[in-house]
Image 1 (cartoon, one colour):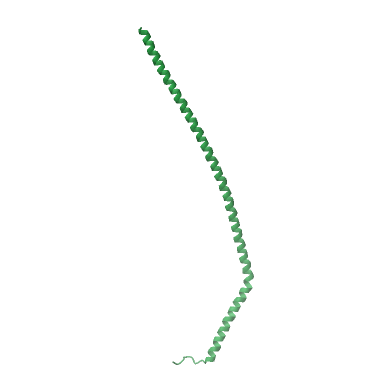
Image 2 (cartoon, helix red, strand yellow):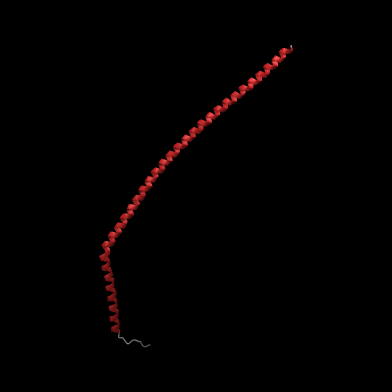
Length: 129
């Protein structure tokens, strides 16, 4: 097959070398630009890292304060629960004592009624004789 372009081999080699040289120049320019902007980028990254560390510290402090507050609430709830239990025990004891007194009073009333019936029967029996 015959080549379409009639360029010589040496011309093609020169063109390839020029292309490589241009790519190398572009790469060097990018490296130089990166070197020039490196301190600014480093400062920006340091500022971002410092801000991130500050946020982490702030969150940790908020968590610590929230834990302290939760512990206070838990202690207060526990104290309230114990107080309520004690009050419930006292109320139950008082109710049991009142029930006991009512029962004793009812028994005394029953006995008095029974005694009154007995005395009435005795009186009726005395009248007949």
